[in-house]
Image 1 (cartoon, rainbow, N blue to C red):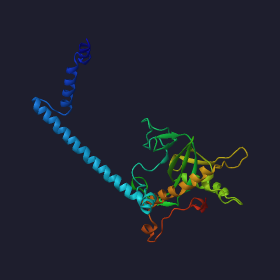
Image 2 (image 1 turned 45 degrees about the vertical axis):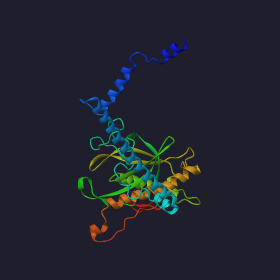
Image 3 (image 1 turned 90 degrees about the vertical axis):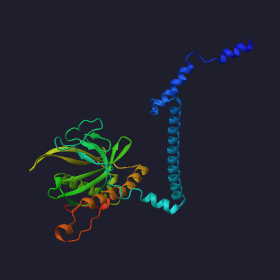
Image 4 (image 1 turned 180 degrees about the horizontal axis):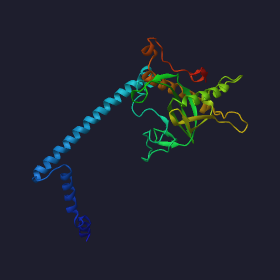
Length: 302
């Protein structure tokens, strides 16, 4: 009785052998094995498996080499510090790395939202995420010196400035860089005049990055037709005073990012600017100015 019960329990269910055979045949098909004898098929599968194992071992060897290199860097404190401090050196102009912010102009701009559609005419477009904003709240961290750069399609050189900051989007901070040229410059300079009232006030001066700024767009007429411009408004409280950064951690975060954005902008200016010595035979160094001391056209300091 016990023996028969054991035999019944050990007996394979109907069709189990067929399923196992189909699994093996599936392996043959995945390995590209067709029209072969049984022995040839097993030999082919065995060869493929050996080749895959050799590839895996080679990959593991490469990974081990990389890990050993990382460990060597980490164990050398001075070298690890140098790596950390220079991790982005030379890479700021790689494609897709610049967090560009621009105003979308219907029929002129080639921007695309994350869902594949076109942004609204005159809305502010944030390239890294493919988002658009009718207006943004931000902190402006720095503004470059003025420089001349070639126009569209190599046209006549135009005066430019580059502005860098962070968008405040809920609890997120999104870094941005925006080129300012043409008619837009006068609005940037006007913002500079307004900001100067606070960056030079006594007894406590307010860094420009601590000001909360609202950016909106408006279509204005000019000698070249109607164009979208960016308007800047220093956000104020109900008491009529600027809305400032009051959290020490947030203040330090913004302060720490000023240098990072300034370095990126300096690289852009040096790469794009037409130097004075090329135009007039006079040497003119290209330098980015500090946030609280930046000077734009018309001697307007921030």
